[in-house]
Length: 95
Image 1 (cartoon, rainbow, N blue to C red):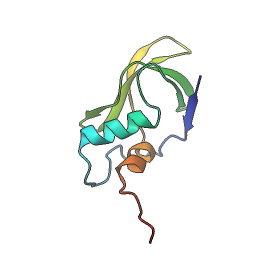
Image 2 (cartoon, one colour):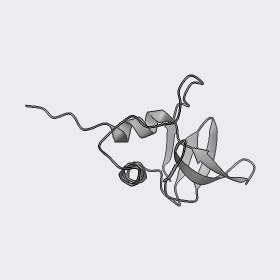
Image 3 (cartoon, helix red, strand yellow):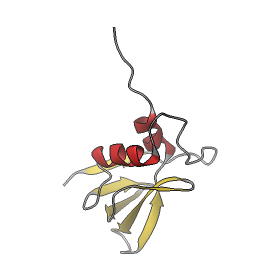
């Protein structure tokens, strides 16, 4: 089992990805490829979750459906900008 860990965003950040040439669907595909896909387990915001859906766009950014391993509650989890920014940035090319 792979558990992904990321630090949560601060309150001053919002969950909107930066301007990029990628569509929201392409960003979701890239986020899925780095481990945020259905049937995976992640640790984020200090809690462990089972991912129930692939990433999907929302008006506030990118989200996933999850089940809390602590309480078994199912909810929509907004992904932090650190994740959406990472996949939205164009790759740097070296000479």
